[in-house]
Image (cartoon, rainbow, N blue to C red; front, side):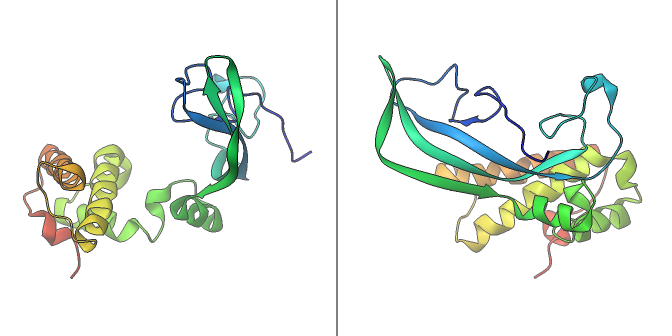
Length: 186
């Protein structure tokens, strides 16, 4: 009663969807691991709740991708070297341990959200989306900077520049007057 079958539309990994895989792209079926928060089912997502339902009761905390195929003009062929790729998110696992589906209320993000609330005098519950974007983008930026990247117009530096710019746009939309480094501890 804890194992559910879903077809390739829900349980297939490729950079694009199963139906839209370009020739030459690898992919394969996957098995997903969900955590049940036990929250009531929202009927706007269908009559029955199930692990792959989008109502918010379940959160995917990991998956195993069985990379076994390559798309060809004739269909799918087995890869010469198959592998299993595990994907799991620390934030999602932490949310499951805390039994709280909001990853931004974990200790991985919450201290930053608290700083935003304190500096701005705004409440997270009323400004979730921009505060989440700032917290997420700053966390990613700190890791890029720690790895030695600086904002520029190439590769990771360009990505870093875009993360920082979007963070500042959201801070300005919240009408907060601060510099980004004020949110990050040394």
